[in-house]
Length: 313
Image (cartoon, rainbow, N blue to C red):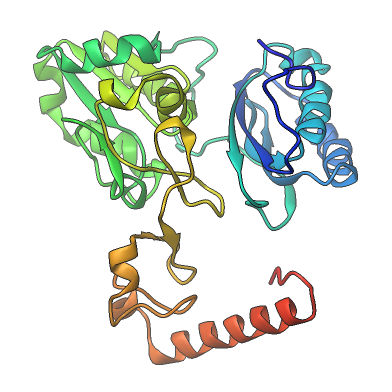
């Protein structure tokens, strides 16, 4: 793996480097890492969210190239994370408001006991081999993400479980006996972590040939040329960029700060859209009292910007 600190391809234009990472490993001392990791990120101007749990680490952070290099070097200096991999993209402005290091029961919440991807997991498939697998008529392709993510982009022919949260995925699998009708199951998610845990669950449920996209959609969009791609749409990301496209270029979606749904340029023209207050996805689910509360929040954000401050409420 190239060291981002010495990679000559990296520029110094001021654009932010975004690093998405996760690593499943037995990590009983996870609580002890919270304070020094947070302090290191703060000292280097790194923002984002990192989750620590008994099963490892997960999260996305952004900062200068040098700052991200310092944080990744610190993590890989921990014996448990020596083999930590990460995925990189760029952002034109800082895509996070603050830095958070949280202690969790799971680094990605499925809510099923005894799922351990370090013991049992599906077969990794490199992005260059993914098209052949999902084009095989003997393969069922499953998107393990949630409905607001799949709404803006999916792989051609994929089954969308339309889950609200990852906790709903196990029940969806148990209820869909037709998944046993074909010998191969191919699963994917944004960066790889959810489908890694999902394939471990599928193995537990008796599925034999279970595959997952190594590095997730992000790695596929980075490595597979657009003209060869079977990806349709944009990929939702959990930061202020909202979405990315082929080559990991920033997408054109905005985020409704009332319901957190991604919205298109066309949806911005909807009469139900009001910046920070409502959109066509949530207008009818919110009361006028809710919208007035959101308007007040927007006013506070505008006041903070006038003062040259960042509103983080």
